Image (cartoon, rainbow, N blue to C red):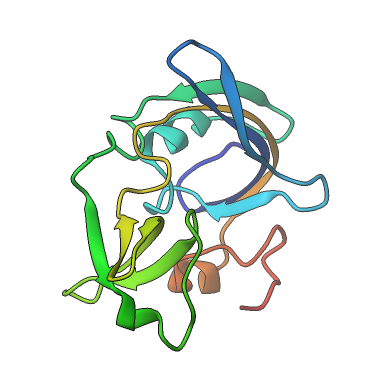
Length: 166
């Protein structure tokens, strides 16, 4: 079956960042028994990622690169904020490099990476962790199937076979 809109796709991938000198830096990979599963064509994935999968079938393999402009954008150096140290009295000081779940003034959930901890503030980078990175994927499609009505209503895949609970 060919990958198409409103299909559940299961695939394995290895993701590397391509550095300025052309070398690859490993980011992550899927485990053999746990493919990455998602609802295709509904805006869950980067458009360029989905574009690369169009027309593939189970067993197909492919390698492709997504530039920062096609992915998570360029890193914006000014996209930092200082959080008052009092915010961490109950939870404790986060270590440098920790990812913090945050919420903006409009109620949107964002993540921030701790850059610095001082006596007054915790400085957080608000860029997406993959901002500014050229991403290289090596993928293999495990399976594809039409999404169930329930998956379409919920807007996400319920596992490889459609039976996983929330």
